[in-house]
Amino acid sequence: MAVATIESGLREKGLLVRSEEPLWPHTTMKIGGPAEWFVEPRSIEELAAVVETGAPLRVLGSGANLLVRDAGIRGGVVRLNRMNRRHGDYVEAGANLPTLVKETVAEGLGGLEGLAGIPASVGGAVAMNAGGRHGEIGAVVRSVDVLEGGAVRRLAREEIGFRYRGTALGERIVLGAELVLAPDPLAVEKYDEILAAKKATQPIGCHNSGCMFRNPTGMHAGRLIDESGLKGKRVGGAHVSRRHANFIVNDGGATADDVLRLVDHVRDTVRRKFGIDLELEIVVW
Ligand code: EPU
Image (cartoon, rainbow, N blue to C red; front, side):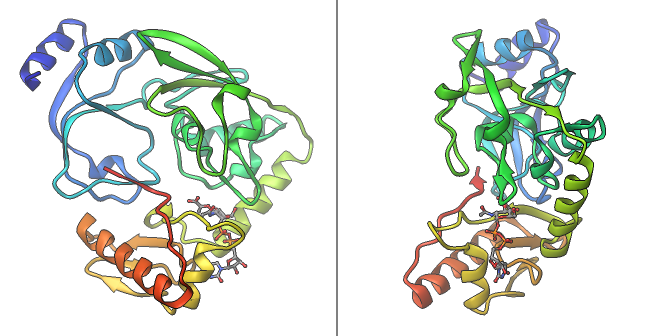
């Protein structure tokens, strides 16, 4: 379907469609070309209208854990940041995870403090079971609402299939999640401790996508990359972080091509040295 047709169809329903929207500002890496068309629905009804166009679509959360290629992408991008409300234990997919973690901890609620410092939207975090050594979001999810055939379907946690950095949700769009939060007088203390540990070991406050590679079973990708002597290795405007080797940092001028060439170099070097194939954790569009 032509972009103009999609645009006018959605405009009639009150949605604003932007064409050739640059995606780099919407990613934590600050890299990437434009989306052919781009829309930020404010409700499930608006999102359903976008899905009903039948056009190829990708869903964008906080743009963390994502690398968008320089050429950009054909088809549409739906950004869910406007669907971000919270009602008690229920949070919409577009809510910002770091803000939610901070907010619940400040309310004296425990459950999410282990996710301190993870850049994500709630929907993105649920879809990939974001987490680290202090816990995964899957552990505190009671149910997830997804959009299926234009209707909302609630999935119980058993149906979500949480595993290491993944779920069985596939292409289904996450609308929101019901969390298990319980009063915990130590929540603030734990949160502060975890955030401090993260700040000490990870590059925070610069443009990156979190960990680039999954940890191979029983091993740490960061350690393998470090022991391959790759800290500080640079391609164009991208380099392997000196603080944590599983992070690639954009110095400001990096292209997606720089990052992908550096990724290939890291993989080749680790394969030659350890005979291990590192698998990307980030998603590439
Ligand atoms: N290490 C090195 N050199 C490095 C980095 C790490 O030798 O440059 C060593 C550390 O000394 C430590 C071990 O590797 O002994 C593990 O390091 P760390 O505690 O940082 O944990 P990780 O396995 O590298 C995982 C998650 C992170 C998460 C942290 C902390 C993955 C791929 N990574 O990292 O998640 O923040 O635990 O909870 O699962 C992410 O997924 O984007 C991410 C950053």
